[in-house]
Length: 152
Image (cartoon, rainbow, N blue to C red; front, side):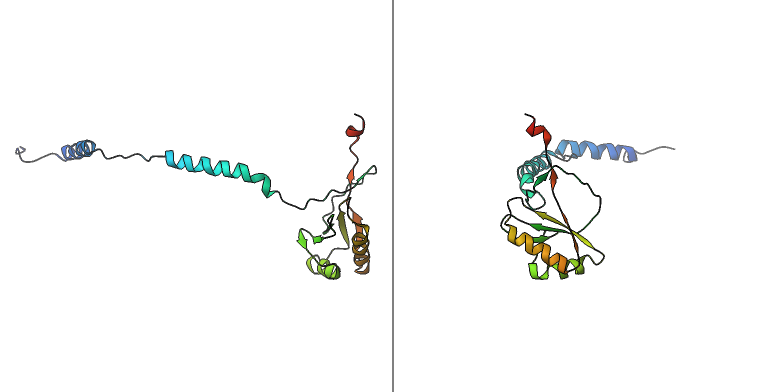
C-alpha cells in the first residue's frame, strides 16, 4: 500500500491544528483572579455587617440567686424596657395577647414572660393579668447571679 504525497495522515492534521492555535495565542485556561477578588470583597462586607444582624430582642432580665432550669418549649412573651410587648419576636397588642397565644400555640398551658429588669411594673402586671384571664400559667425568665463578679 502506497500513499501519495498529497495524502496526509489524520494524526498530522491534529498536530497541525494544535500548532495553529498555539501560534494564534488562544487561551484555554480560566482566569480566576476576578472571581477571588469578588469573593474577598463579599467576605469583607459580611464581616463588617455580621454584628448588625444579631437575632432577637435586647432584654436584660433580672438576676436571682435561685436557679431553676427547664427544658420546656413554651411561647415567650417579652416586655421591653419601654413597655412594648412581643410574642416570640413578633409585636402584639396586650388586648389580643391571650387569643394570639391560644391561636398560635393551641396546646400551650403556660407561657414564659421575659421582662427587662428596668421595665415599668404596670405593663408587666397587666401582662400577667391578661395571661391569667386567658387560663395560661406564667413562668418568669431570669438569669442566675454571676458569683465570679462579686468575688473580685
